[in-house]
Image 1 (cartoon, rainbow, N blue to C red):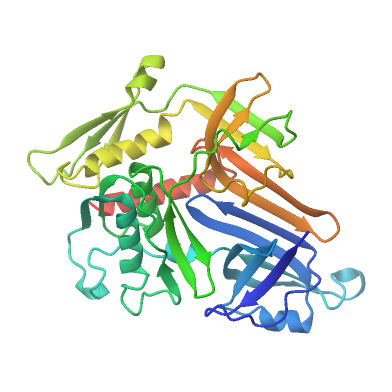
Image 2 (tube, rainbow, N blue to C red; image 1 turned 180 degrees about the vertical axis):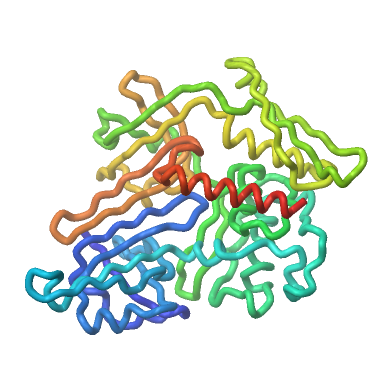
Length: 384
């Protein structure tokens, strides 16, 4: 196992030697969402001096940055004398995320270049534009190099253009920035986005996940499939019935259908409150497409895989890539890598697993999923 933990300041400058004596590391990276992690170690004075507010934790695995970002809880200290608690010097646990968490704390302003007190009643629109371009524009104008000085994230830049994605549109007003980017990514070709720490700073990158269904295969026979749950069920929506704003006459109505799912199962309608007045630039169609992506897949697959010498996470496949899972029945199912989980201890070594499945495949509690959905809906209402 070759894992190092470094603490840096906001400018990516190391604040001391690599953290020593850590006993447990747990990191989960997620497709198009911020990561989450924790590490526990002795509370040595030089360690505590590094664990300060505003600093970052960098996890280096095999000489590559595996996860890097701000410490959300830099010090969770347990200390006690004798049998009353942790013997001196005590134990400290650090909770951290990756740098994608910084943009996640922003909203989409209708007029990003204007002061908050000068925001208009209209929405921010980017119409009939490449999806990668839209995502990059939303990020740079709200928190990146082109943002107002008071909203700009230090050292955040845009990676070179990847040239991926299809044409789409966006209509947004005070929605979560990453939630809006995810919506564009789904409609614009199933794109991914992430942050990367480089020698010069932190890059925000849009990318096209790879089709690795021929080379990244998981099965019991290959020794890299630890467990799985598989459920084939009826879709929750096959026909998204999208409505435009009720403030416009005549009101716009758009139907987006998954005819294949309806033919296989049956018709299931869902009313969707659109984010635009009309579908001139395809915004209401995008709303319907997003609804179908969330509810029309009848196959729910959640797997836990393990790294093997022949197939390693981060080297042979990554977040968002399309891979193949062979069920015990012999049926092959193709789906996306939703998250990658790294656990490590000095004695037991490292254990890397991946969660593969449909959008509903998640390890989040139901209440967390509900809060996210309510937040998304409220943001969409505000955008109208």
